[in-house]
Amino acid sequence: MRFTPAALAVSLALLTMSSAGQSQRADHQLDPRSVALVQKGDAARGAGQLSEANGFYESALAVDPRNRPAYIALGAVARQQGLPGKAIRMYREALDLEPNDLAALAGQGDAMVQKGAVTKAKENLARIRKLCARECADATRLAAVIAKGPPPVVQSAQVNVKVPPADEKPTPKPD
Image 1 (spheres, rainbow, N blue to C red):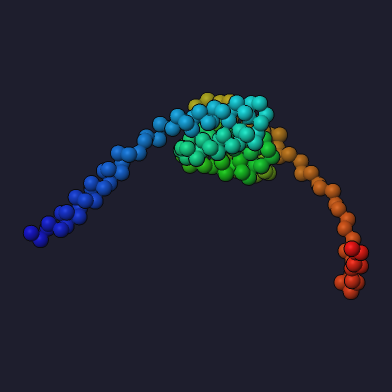
Image 2 (tube, rainbow, N blue to C red):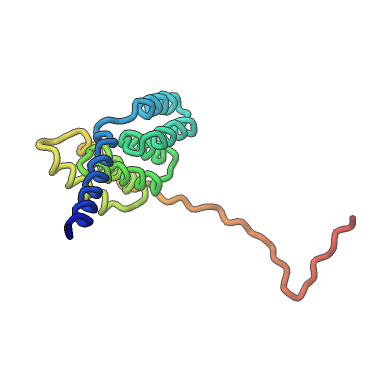
């Protein structure tokens, strides 16, 4: 009689945990709508419509946040748009889902070089080489990007603005 409340609580907890596990899909099963949106994004990106492709990829992630190819594609779009910080973040999201994804590691390394973080990119290259039994295309491409180095920093033109001294009052404009 003393164990009845405890046994009831334990059985309720086990019942709740087992029912939660049945409703989840396996990690390798992506929502077909999400996969279709990634394909539309790939077509738009191939046509040079980066903004539209970005929208398709983000929609794919809204449908299924486990869609690793969508994160990788968003990283590639961000790199093409000259946004290496965003690209690094998107590749990190893909690597959170699969830490050994060669495309994500190579893309992230490329974005790191674009941002100027060559040392971190070399760490990604070492990791790719460790994962590849032999020389693979991702390692070769990233090694070439690292050898080329980061893009040169472009100085922006200075704009001269005349600021009146603090004791001068601005002249009012006639209405």
